[in-house]
Image (cartoon, rainbow, N blue to C red; front, top):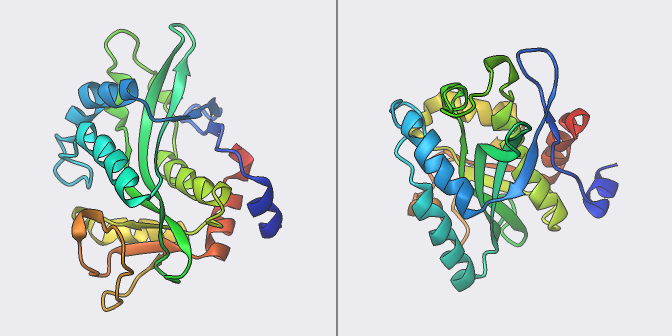
Length: 231
């Protein structure tokens, strides 16, 4: 089953649960400038009010162009995705999560293999979606499990780009142990702090400090299967 999944391709998640008890359609799109601009003006200011969030103070207007330049120079195949919902009344896409990837880096568990690296991942607070001035989203219609769905976008990209699900990231220290435990519950392995990092790009050149996480191939396939009911 895992082999078939890797060879035939995996669709992105197409539905998300809500407080209403009914799933809501969602869509994963290639990240575009309007997505980032909307996030910068509508979502990031609300995130920045909470200094305990790992994504507080982020500037997507800088990260996306930097990733593109790094990708061209270092052939790391950057890819950006926006996960969101479509406002049926106004026919517009509302980003609820953003993911910026590097698509080709050495795998943390096997440096001779290639892996996807999640450079930045952020989900919108409920307040950012319920307070949209011209057409707020009702609280019971806000998509849930956005963190898991956004992480799955990276795993799906890895599977479909023949990285076989290998996916790695750095858990920002502001997230503390709670963030590391969240990634562990998603099936990721934490790289020991004494482990040597492979050559290649590192998130903000951070040393190995026990906060790098990665999916092995079997764990990635299992994590992907868990969200199959929403595909």
